[in-house]
Figure 1 (cartoon, rainbow, N blue to C red):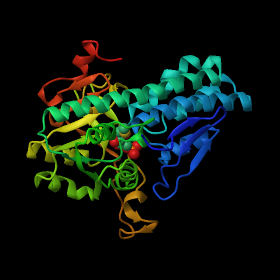
Figure 2 (tube, rainbow, N blue to C red):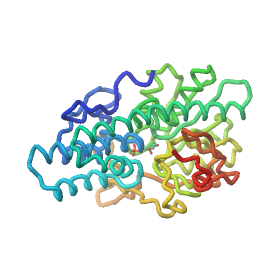
Figure 3 (cartoon, rainbow, N blue to C red):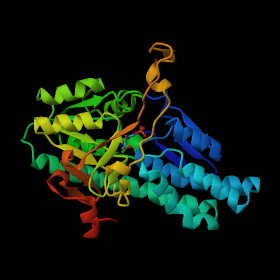
Figure 4 (cartoon, rainbow, N blue to C red):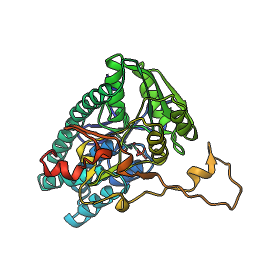
Length: 347
Ligand code: MRU
């Protein structure tokens, strides 16, 4: 089982998105029929997570083409709308890649675009199953017989993908093999993807978990309470530097200090071979209000501003293993996405 509710669905004339802003308390859907609504949904994190953004971007082109047909836009207007979808969020390379993948179908109309987007969605689910199996094999080969204590950060689950999940796909696979004792789900400030979404998914799947404050994570690792950390990624540079949700670097440093593996689970579509290293990753900075307020009420003194980067970059030397749908790269031991691509391991 992934989750009972699909994150993203094409209904023929609209993109139906599970509204992740109101989970876990309400399961609601948003029917997106125009580009303004889609860009807003992406920015508000109605749909989020790198692979899910890729699929939403691909279907977003179908939304734009359908709207162009309906409203009589010329090609320039349609292409400008597609560009707005492509640029709605900057860090996850999958969004732009999802849009680019379906561009060759634009001239054939919205149905042709949607069919290619559906192919991307189906590939994503298949890829996640493979990531889960490769990741579980690799982890179990390096740990003893005991059930594992796993730490994860943010949400890299079914909700962040087209289904099953990347990091949580590995956790689901480990659980299926009877090898999960507990998952520490970092709450993931400021938007609580861990507390709201990861805990919801794990609970639905019957996988034991506890939510901890982000600030607790390094200490939990250093106290010997964690066997392996598994996280997702938004963009991985050619050398293995990995951008993921803010707070991932602290987890990575603690893992290195404690001598436990940091596993990054992500599809090849998250690898950006055009970037030699992580210095070039565009880091999204979000609204100050996400940090300065809680539940709609201001917590910081009036007049004080905020620094709110949504992502950080973990250096490749701290990434023990990168698990993709084609296998495992031991990055801190010198394997790189660039070399693997050169050897033909990219789909
Ligand atoms: O801001 P978000 O919620 O889109 O950030 C998501 C993450 O950082 C995930 O860990 C990443 O996209 C991988 S999802 C499989």
